Length: 307
Image 1 (tube, rainbow, N blue to C red):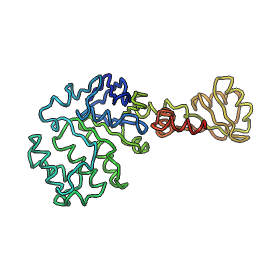
Image 2: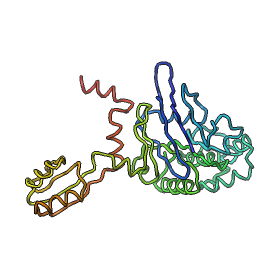
Image 3: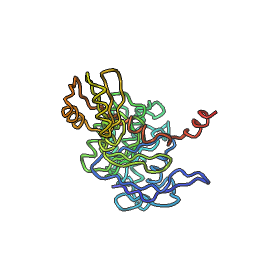
Image 4: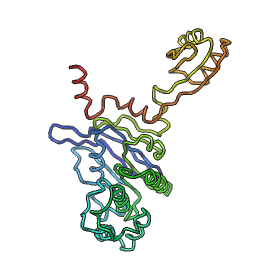
């Protein structure tokens, strides 16, 4: 389990992360989401001791990362897949990492096999594609068979087959009881991979919850109705507190009322319905709605809009 408590990071007068607290539980894949510049990478760097918090702390299974003598046995991280020596082979790259943390050399071939790189174990890293580099980074994170995994954009550069592999692989690791935290800008993939979400903007927590709860909280969820009595039904819906937008002379888009309640209201008014369909927001819809104005370039865009 990962626990961030009051985490703050300042670079001079710039506040990258502000009073950020959240929990990444065992046994689940937690998606770490936010616009560019939200503070995701800075937060993950603080988790593994690469950046020192200005305030607050991160504990992994109750202990700060830096207090571990051999941290790779407890925490595996992929923060920058291409931070490797181009002249080393994949196997030798993993061997020195293993040696640095008292991990048996036999573990190297095991993880290379796990991530599908066994056939290129003797190839120099300078010739690796971006996708191969991502797989090697995941292999490095797995070296110590850790209970906690931190992966920053793990599907970056992977083809559809590779993305599918990562999805099933990470879910399998979480099913073994591990805590898995992944950041990504691919909302459609997060919707399929993550169980829980932590969403931040401008260094602050926006929300934490299950994928379903985050989507359910979007105001873009609604109901679509097709009826020959659109005007009469719209009046009744508005009187009941719903927001109604006519789409055409027979079609209404309704917000603020569940599909079941719309159907019951129509029945009580003896209104004929040709169609009654829930309109569910996607994770991308919900994310864009909750992070509007929290992006890295929001200030510049507002200046352009006002000029």
